[in-house]
Length: 246
Length: 246
Image (cartoon, rainbow over all chains, first blue to last red; front, side, top):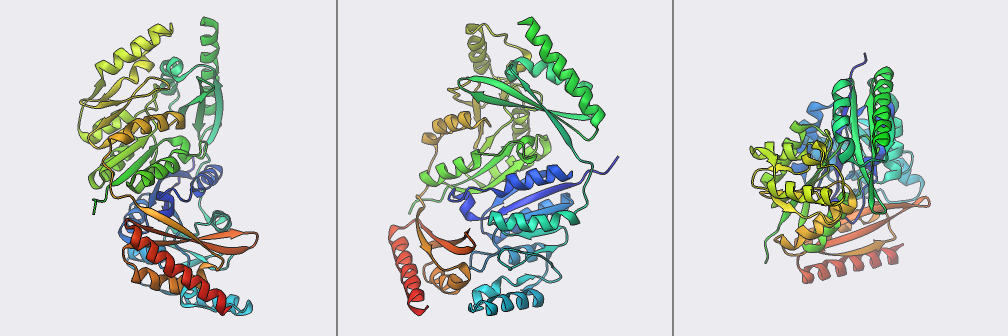
């Protein structure tokens, strides 16, 4: 059986915590990790505040194979992610020569001033490797098991696409959804027994509220197709029995 | 000047981390907190896994006036929030007599079995106070500074509406948005100087990417209307100067 590979995510930005911007990166990363067989275990959303970023990055990198961050790598004074991640690793943060040249050429070609602010985007922890940015050039970076990417969803998604083929993935978690016309209160007891009888699966139940009544989406997850099938069959049988009784 | 009041949020649920469900509660809480003058400082999304829930609740309740949790208070085996929050406080978790009666009557009236699973929804840490659930009866609860609420957005929002009038709120953070036609790289330098000259404000800049080009939304936040106005004027002047120069 393949190893289980876990990841954490740190979303950096006052604008998410104030509600001004609604995050769209968490759901995307979650979808992508599930698709490739990495378990996203924890997400933290923190303010543009170095101690909080350092704490979150260090907590999550210690207990996950990978940590992905979004936000705070632009050219303005509130973009402090590079410094904070360098501090988390105890590394100096300075202009990366290759990133500096890349940006210098990019702006020269377009006749745009390579301002002090734009130069900030070439700063990264010493020893970091670039993550290509096909949209606006300024690279993200990888240091250790931490991948630092942009907050703008189009750029984040492009950066993640280039990172994904380099990741070691685990046994893929496969899942099956079984809609239940019964609310959770009715199926909770039997479902708990099915969970106990099928330890190789993770059975979740998600209440849905629509037009004044409740139904339930039951989701079975497993790394074994056989175990998944067996649990799914047991749940379907349980649901049929309930219908006959009512 | 009024005190600053901060809050944390713990979102509990494997379905968010797997991507199957896209969270809609973080953005709602962020909006509501900003509106009433409470700073949302940190959000953690954790799995249905007691040690992670305990760690998140304890970390955030120690450093914030309030902690709000969503998810994991239904009737099924994967609903472990009540137990986890009780464990975080070192309290026993048992059937709350008032909640038990409330649910018992509710199901009796509708001729629905008050199953063992449904009884689980009456469990809460000893000493907890109810948070009313006008939609599906099963209450949330408050213990210490932690407010435990449902994950279904309609129920979460209704519960939060009843909690909000009881909260001590701080000086309201007011904000003004100033659209900049210039990308961040152009305004980053002058904006940083304006931030330094206006320490009573928090100036954020958020890159927007649309139809192949960048513009920037500049947001000034302050607890003082006067300070906000002064910083806004300085930014508008800076943007005009830039337009004249180009």
